[in-house]
Amino acid sequence: MRIDIITALPDLLKSPFEISILKKSIDLKIVDLHIHNLRDYSNDNYKTIDDNQFGGGAGMVMMVEPIDKCISKLKNERHYDEIIYLSPDGEKLNQKLSNKLSLLKNIIILCGHYKGVDQRVRDHLITKEISIGDYVLTGGELAAAVLCDSIIRLIPGVLGNETSALTDSFQDDLLAPPIYTRPREYKGWEVPSLLLTGNFPKIEKWREDKALEATLKKRPDLID
Image: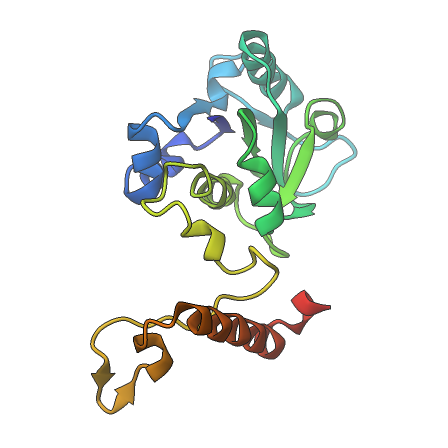
């Protein structure tokens, strides 16, 4: 998968992709990541990418021209399955959406900043808008890192155990069941004895029951 991220703050995005699973995906060439500094597409010597709102109002707006120039350049080089804008009023990110996006070949992610982007960007250049939650961030860079993490870990070859992602919370609209590791007993706190029996059909049924129990208790809306 190729991911192109367009941002006004490229340095903010470097760290998440230099460690752990995301770095591994790049090193293995499973993911081809490119971060583009939007200021490189500005028309003036000051690298301006924002301006005041027409009609007045507080907050600066990201200009349509630098964004269009960057996206057009990328689209002239290859086909993109989705051009995503991260916005508080976009489609809410969930596991099903991450699963769907992980199957794509090429995507562009546009990080908003300031008050947001000129509406013409959203009307004419963007194919999908995504929100990571009902709150507002200073910019879309952290949201882009969250989105990329949720997608990349699902791509075959990224995780050490290919079935690991399939047992995550929300994959089957349920929260994950409790998990345990050594020691078997600590401060009198014991691991459920069934997990030590090796009876995998019964263990799997126990996990299903516990997942349903946790979901009903903590996130009943998922069941509804």
